[in-house]
Length: 247
Image 1: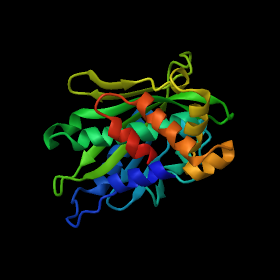
Image 2: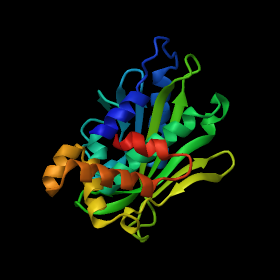
Image 3: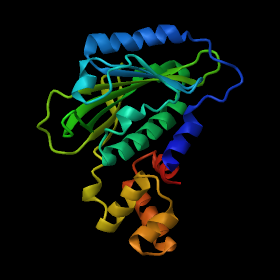
């Protein structure tokens, strides 16, 4: 999947100067979130390309495997959780994480800790029905090499399940209590039927040649639609994030 490759290139630490932050300390912090908030807590280590998943009863409600708790994954991607996210929301989540990374990368190191991602996404539960889940993400940077070391993701079943079926994606300044970036990203309102079809295939990781075959159109037509998608979905100061997502 193209967008995963782009994220891996940006997120995984390639620095020769290793971060000395204590992984055990941050694993304890992740465990505390799971125990205190009832949130599935995922600590991803960019230096070792591993994740540690802590599962409270929320995980059982979402139909996740509770046999290994906590579980250790040889990837920064919590695939068991990600595959339960609605396909549309999964693509938006990846795009938003790229935008968050770009924003953090442009900031001075001393203020990065003030920011986090707050999203509401749809996830399949144990009954194979979609429910709204509150997703939060925090970045922890290394004081040794200035690189992103940890990402902490929290998944918590939302209290309010009555909202319209549109997912919220926000970047917030926690210190000021301000929303910095807010996107509904409701593609249904701004893309044509054909563009929605192509976006769906892009989100599933298909290349333009494959999409052209599926839809019986030329590669040039697919490329034109993909460019139109980028132009229609652009937001201030984050066009490059969308380009990184699709190319």
